[in-house]
Amino acid sequence: MISLAALLLVAAQPATGSAAETAIQAFEPQGFTTRFTIEIEAPVTEVFEAATGDVTGWWDHSFWPDPAEMVIEPRFDGRFYERFEAGSDNGTLHARVIFVRAPYELRLHGPLGLSGRAFDMVTSWSLEDAGEGDRTAFTVELHMAGEIDAEMAAIVRSVWVHFIDARLRPWVEADCHLAPDEACSAFVTQP
Image (cartoon, rainbow, N blue to C red):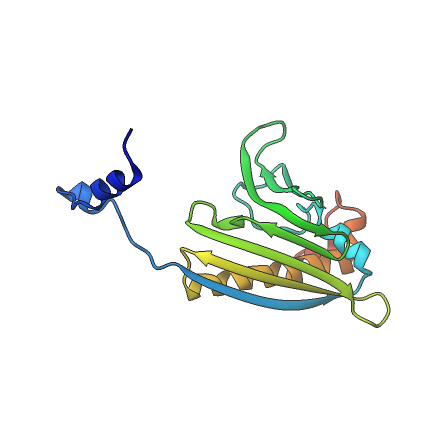
């Protein structure tokens, strides 16, 4: 049996040949954190229920064009997954639910749309009564580490702002979550 020290010694030896020389590309691991809050005109419980379960009505980024399912299972060790075609085992696991205290908190661990990169992310949702009437303050906190630079971190943040402010908020405020199989008036484009 080869020891780890021997294996590392062999791995540290310079490789020869052009294919071997380009086989390893270094990257500088970096870490980022960001946080934002969006107010949604609906009670906390209603917003949490609309944000979890079948999210195909408001979640608009996927690996597969028109996926059969996009689901966030709001339970401990639940999955956020995308099934490409109905009845198929093909799809992707975007993240795992590592913490849930429904309807106030949900935490996801996984690469989401960055699958395939040396990247790790924890996404935390906090929902609380915004004080006046039936308004929810929906806070997203992102902790990112790995093969990511400041530009990618800014893109990830802007995509999350898009999901909550441009997709979930209008989805809930137009009551589309109450009739998820119908076209959502909030997303109908004018000719």
